[in-house]
Image 1 (cartoon, rainbow, N blue to C red):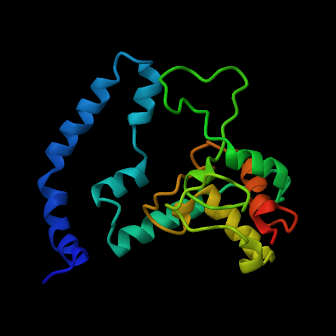
Image 2: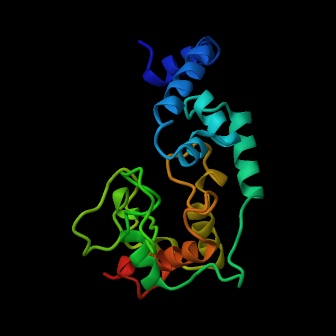
Length: 205
């Protein structure tokens, strides 16, 4: 009896080539359905970049050579804070981790003036133990610094992973917060501090 992974590997090449016309039609329907609501805003959202197109084409399971291509391209696009500091203020990071609004989430109306975007990290991860609502889609990050340390390598890894996870894992479901300009490099550094600073609630016993 074939496993699910084996069946996917068997059928995926056929699906990739057989449904291109259907996929194009589906994308057209999606674009047209948003035509009456802030056309420029939604039209921009409908445009996939090269990575998104590849991940869609292979249903988030690209072959090894394509995955390597994605990772390499995303590593080249990495940006860092102007001051070079990859670990910012954990208190700012805590606030960003808890903000689940901004960027027209749940509405087609523009953000109110001064609205702040956040990482909404608790939607997928457990972080500080005192948080009442936390997701389990992603791994628990509670006590992250105690497990991974605070070396220069750890700090850089966490920064780059938050900034653009696809620089490590092609077609990851985690948002590319920095790459897509959802968060600034400095805000990404604040989230790094929230995960790694020993004084952060994430790392308290």
